[in-house]
Amino acid sequence: MKISYHGHSIIKIITNGKTILFDPFITGNELTDLKVEDEQPDVIILTHGHNDHVGDTEAIANKSGSLVIAPNELAVYLGWQGLNTHGMNIGGAYQFDFGQVKYTKAFHSSAITTEDQQIIYMGMPAGVLFTAEGKTIYHAGDTGLFSDMKLIGERHSIDIAFLPIGDNFTMGPEDAAVAAKYIGAKMVVPVHYDTFPPIRQNPQTFIDLLEEGIDGKIMKPGDYLEC
Image (cartoon, rainbow, N blue to C red; front, side, top):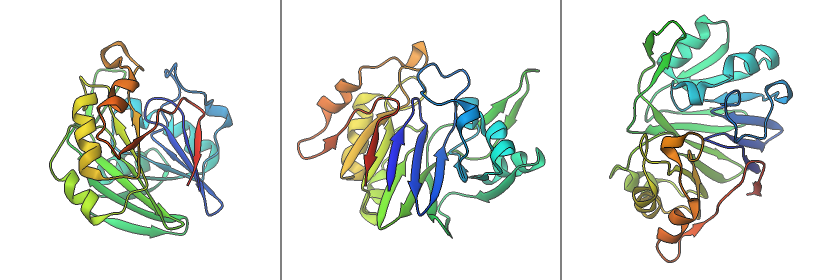
């Protein structure tokens, strides 16, 4: 399994002959190394409905025929736009041919903001546990710290956790370091920072706050891990 980071909250996983792209916010993301025209994922997984996470889903999926997995209301909405979708909800898991997807709780909001100043509710935000090849990757989505992260860590052996650290809209470094302790992942990677002025952070601050024994890694856009 190859796992790469591409700025903001974009994660790409290649496993079982398939490419899975999480939260493909490319257009307007000055930190990403990706180009919409180059991306041809088999699957797109979304954590919630905000524009900086849904991003270029429609353009990529229309071009590539990607299956879009998303919280149910968001999946229904994108299905109305003509995309091939699979709706899920918090606590539910589904075994696909490329791996298992399970949605977890996240404390945040979720809506698409349109150009004509409409806000369309997109259901509950979520995190994602993705399991394939005997490995589990946790994409926390956008969230604040919550105590049930302990249960997520106790019930799942997590190999890599991607945790937001930007503050303002999500956890900051201090709370994210507590989340890392709760989750108990073998490795934690900070995401969702530096993209916009309100979420400027030094990721090393998060790494320095981690308790002894927790392995933290700063990934630059384009960096990858073999798991």
